[in-house]
Structure formats: C-alpha cells, structure tokens
Length: 116
Image (cartoon, rainbow, N blue to C red; front, side, top):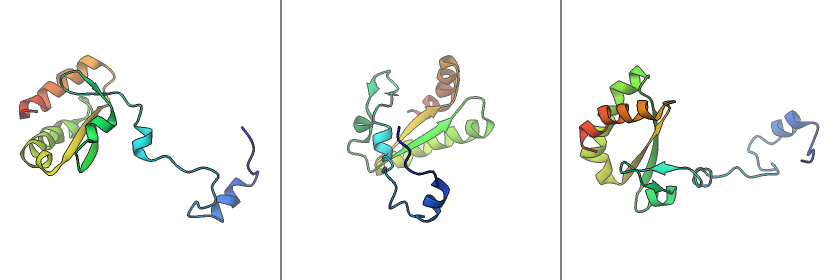
C-alpha cells in the first residue's frame, strides 16, 4: 500500500461528508455479490437471484441460542407468509449458529412450522 497522509484524523475531520476520500465505499449489493446463499431446498443462489423481482431484501440474523430470537423468529415467519412476501419482501435468514445441525434444528422448529 501507499501512505496517503500521516494526518488521517485531521483529514477526516476536515471532510465530514467523505467527499475527498481516496476510495468510495462499496454498495451492500457489491459486498454480497460473492455471498453463499442457500435456499430451503439446498440450492445455492446469488444475491441477484434472490433479489430478482423483489421490492426489498432483508437480512435477518438469528441463532438457536438467542432467547429473543427464538421468540421473534416464528412471528417474523408468520408475518412473512401472511403479508410481507406478497408485498415483495424477501428475507434472507443469516444464521449465527456455529454448528450446521443447530441451525437446521432451529430452522425446522421456527421457520418450517410456519409453512415456509
């Protein structure tokens, strides 16, 4: 790499909107371009496939070991099935579980019970 400035704090303070930064932050869609997204049937998809014909895409982070998540996830699944999906929202479930088996058990308990 190359040193841009040794006065980084001053440079950022003088440019609060980031207009003069030497790089442009990537869009979320660019960051997710290489993400491994697996549908409930086990098929790998790209973020573009998931977002196709959708008005919005939500990332929902959850895990079986999280009590508030265990309470909210079934409600979100029911709301998605009854209303949100028809409005064009796609929800990507992002697991924080460390073990795939824990994720699968949690998914079966909370998501598939709701008919998803």
